[in-house]
Image 1: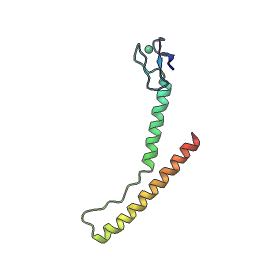
Image 2: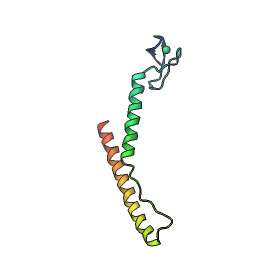
Image 3: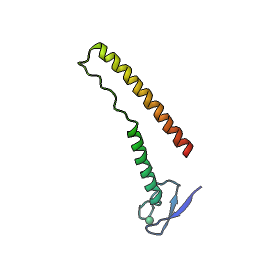
Image 4: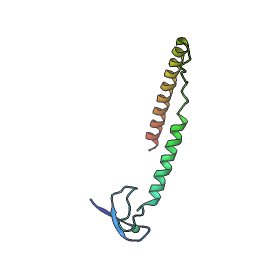
Length: 98
Ligand SMILES: [Zn+2]
């Protein structure tokens, strides 16, 4: 089904696919700049969230002894597991909130 939306910029009617990225056929401005803004803000928030759980992984240096490398790998494993659990919880929260 084709919908139309009035362009807020040139006041002409354009095809509207219910996408925030839809642009006016006449002036090529966004048909729903507010929704687009919201989407951008959401993207930024998600980026921040992903930064939060992006724990600096312990670095394994080529100069480390086999013993040190072994322990560092275990610590890395825990860090990765922790991040996976954390992202799962965040995903769950997003799901419940949405
Ligand atoms: Zn327009």
